[in-house]
Length: 265
Image (cartoon, rainbow, N blue to C red):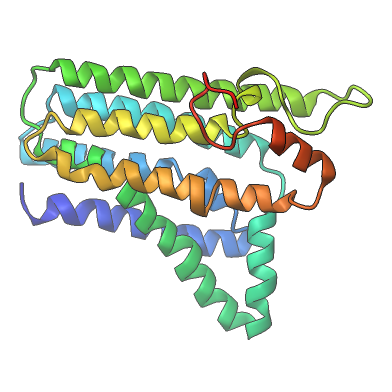
């Protein structure tokens, strides 16, 4: 472990997001950053793997486990968001309109810092348990806690994936008179199974990190993604969009906001 074990992920994430900023300005669409959100977790792990091979230390079994879990999640999420992307998301449109009131330069520096650099920081925080494991793990023997972490990650990943697929089917259904808001499948039990699954899988990653010496200190990583999707960038922004609709208010009375899929109010 040396200085570059910590510097490489930071350079990779902020360097990537800085380049993405310029590309998104050319496309006039900042929401492409959501497509790359998952990949900003994968790229620094790959960079650390490359560093280990260059150093001749080589990743252990637990590091490979982290690469597989984060890699599967990040590639699926990037594909899912990218496949449905057609125009700039309403959240970024709102930001653009507000920031443009401060002039072009005022818009640019706010977009660079508040969208691209801030998301880079958030991704490093969320990814901390995985990065910690890749940096410090030196044991090819997996423990029962590793297996528990993998099981929780698998359940969370399945909930997120199934929830996304059910929503996709609901949106593709053009039956006249169909209820706008999905209330079947996992969505019958929580308004946001994809967000719940997202938070849950990162707790699985954290449990794997706990098998590494003092890995428990990275508990802030799963806590942050849980807080982020529930109280900051996920649920609140989405629910605020429909807050004034009567059918949404009725839907909210009948479903829970962010709870285990097996629980219904």
